[in-house]
Every structure is written in C-alpha cells, then in structure tokens.
Figure 1 (cartoon, rainbow, N blue to C red):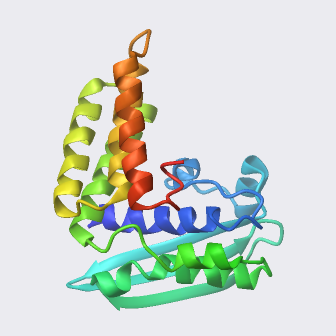
Figure 2: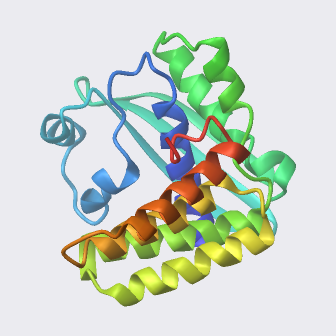
Length: 219
C-alpha cells in the first residue's frame, strides 16, 4: 500500500519536527520534486539549505513491512548511518517505528530529546492501520488540490476519506484536523470566510485537541 509507505515517511518527519533541538525539519513534499531526478546530495542540501537528508525505501511483502532509512550528510556527501527495519504489519509494531527512528537519528546527531518529547514519540496518533491508510489518502488529495489541480473535487474526495478514517477510528485526532483543513481550503477558493465556517473549523480542531493535546496538526 503506497499510502502506508508514504505515510510512514511523513510520520518520521513529523516525529523529527517534535524534537525542538532540530532547528529545521522539512516535510516530505519539499523533496518530492527530486524523486524522479538525480541531483547530488550536496546540490539538494544547498538548494534546501539543510545539512542532512533522509533517504529510504520500503516495501510490503505479504504481511511484512521492510524499511530501510539512511541518514545522509549533504556537506560530506556520505551516508552517516542506515536504519533497517523488518516487521509484521500490526498496530503494535508499525506505529512504533516512527518514534524509534526519530530518537535514533537524534541520538546519532547528539540532539537532546526532552521527557515530554520522548513521551509524544512513544504514543502514536492511531493504532488502526486502515484508519491511517484512509487518512493518508485524504492527505494526498489535499496535496493534489494545493500543488497540482486546485480543483474542488479533490476537497470533496478528501472530506469523504477523512470521514471514513474516523469511522475506522473515532478517536483519530489527525483525521479531525484533516476535515478542518478541507473547510479551510474550501474557503481559499472564494473571497470570504463566514463565521459559521470559522466556528466549524474551531470545533473540529478543539475536538482533535481533546483527543490528542500533543497533536501538532491541531495547534
């Protein structure tokens, strides 16, 4: 499932963004343009103004996820460390790796992780694989709207998919944030935002915070 794989890399990035000692962590879509091109790591580093890159591959074989993440120095143009993982696709394992990888990278770069940050990294936003896969499909529809088509049909589809994610896990805070983003982006296609829509967005974000106060998506 490509949505699960893309979601894994998104969640690793999100986990790294929670560690405040990292001055700057760019999201996955910042490097998507390099996927089908072949610039060198130093070139990417200079263009994005970053010292390190995460490169990786993942594949799902039957019910097993094989993941290989490499931490690369853009200045030295070399792999600092590789993190191989192989696990069964089950809630108890697949959602645990995000925090493990983020903590391993922080340790490798001698970055401090506070107790509150460590607590967040140890608690995933959902334990439902189907809910997470649906959520990731919704995120991809939002990205398609923002960066490719700017067509409202993508927002309608994203809205429906986030609702499916909530049917699969009613306590999935990030899916509520997804619904709020749909409303926000819908307003970007018209000239004004009504108070009713603003109130609806606030209710959705408040719900997300009530389910997961540490959700960076909701704050």
